[in-house]
Image (cartoon, rainbow, N blue to C red; front, side):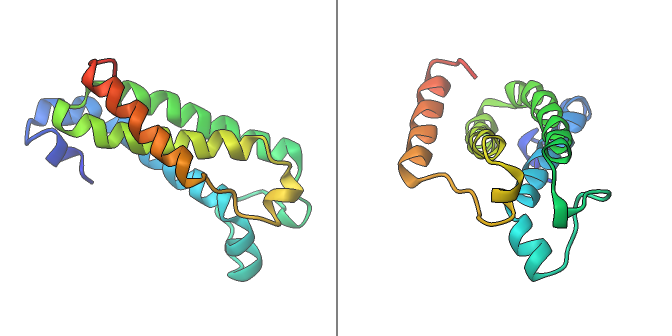
Length: 141
């Protein structure tokens, strides 16, 4: 939704980055769904990954979801690098935050995902912002 604004109205750039932007949004949303399975499934009876049996959530089901998310992140990064400089830093920070959260979730066993909500500590969030700032200043994004 923000891509058109980020592209400063340049339709050609918008069209070029649209697929990457959709992948980024999908990755963020799927990470949130995976992180919040406990609350969504147990508390609200919501299922965002059709075909998964969250009463018996398996490593194989979790791995399939993770492979899909990994693909979204890969496609999204190509678009992040091509964003105009004004928008790139903020989007990159969000990308790195969600990627960190995803990496942490990948280390958690399926049964544990059903019991707890994975979080990134504040000091790690600060490090993400700091590193992104340095990379941005050095034009490494």
